[in-house]
Image 1 (cartoon, one colour):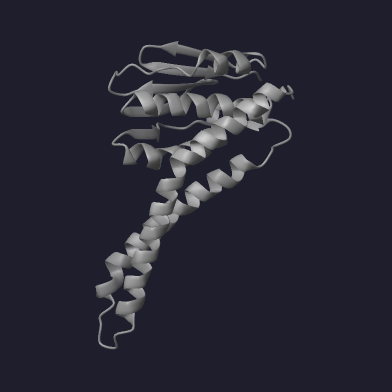
Image 2 (spheres, rainbow, N blue to C red):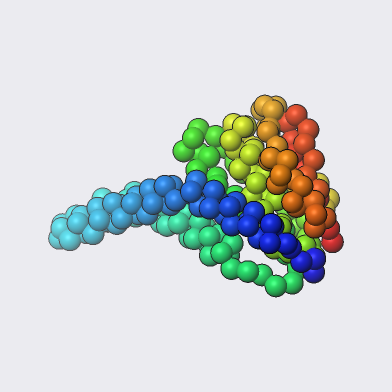
Length: 198
């Protein structure tokens, strides 16, 4: 495994704070939605002659919202733990998208995973560096593009503007810090790509 520097660890902390800052409001909103829908289910189900159909829509909404809460919570818990050994790049992308996609939707934007990410595999790079690179690219993409997709192109992660809007790359400081451990971030007008050392 390639070790990260204190600068990379600091970059990951800053990136995680930005991700959590974007996700916190949406997580709270989804939890409130679950709570409201379950309260309706509870109150209507206590009426002795109320048909089950009177709560079905609310129960379905609560279940759907709870799935979103679980995805966001899983991502948050996984990203808050250090991971010794090789970094699972597809899982890291999924966790970050689970946290950032709801925030992007709230801003009228779209962030999604397009297809399988399996070919991205694992990387020997330190998890702080990999998470920093992916998080910084996704944050930059959803701040500058309105419709963004993550795709695997062999061992490279492509973050693409699906409406051909220009995507702003992360700052030069971020690109330089992750390059020190072998991660390459490339920018084209409507795509950002990340290549990880194996």
